[in-house]
Length: 233
Image 1: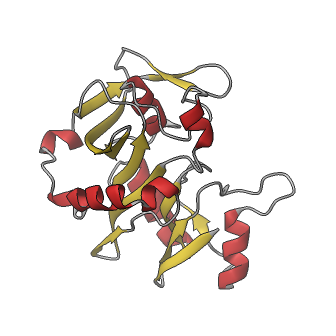
Image 2: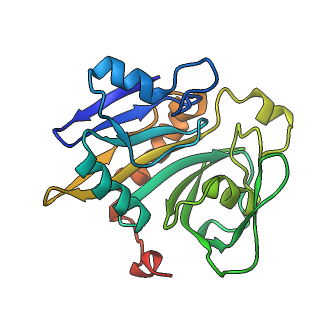
């Protein structure tokens, strides 16, 4: 369900497994319930969320003051986040921006609009992993529901294993998980900047040698050529 990455007086960092809901799902225990029981910490507070299908880094505050500070940082887009994704489709562009308003569609899906009144903003790089598999490093500026999944679909490269945004073809149906992982993030708390990087540990394609080799391109995502405009555009 999760791996504990770090435990500090003000927060904990975990690596969430794919397919795990943060909140209680009908009769099943949610991640927050399990963490409170495992760590003996009833005062754990959610300050951000990941879709159930998404694996990777999460920070949870251990008291209300830290929760307020971290929640505000996420709300104000002051947390620098990077995600890894895989698709079996070649994108319309290898790198750049996906920017546009988002609106609810059918079946729980969202769609990207051509307008930019209050847009979702995502910067991305992509590299070929092997024939039929492409890796993406995604840097969202905003945090809309399903933002990255919709961004990939808009590029013509829906997330491999995505049950909502990928056509139900044989390759997608055979995927062992949805290939989206919160890879790295940085935030400020207590007068210090905290930075974490956690490669994915589950998924046949994430663990395959071609992807591991390609991941070397993204060892330090902050060192890539991310123009300052990606934070303000």
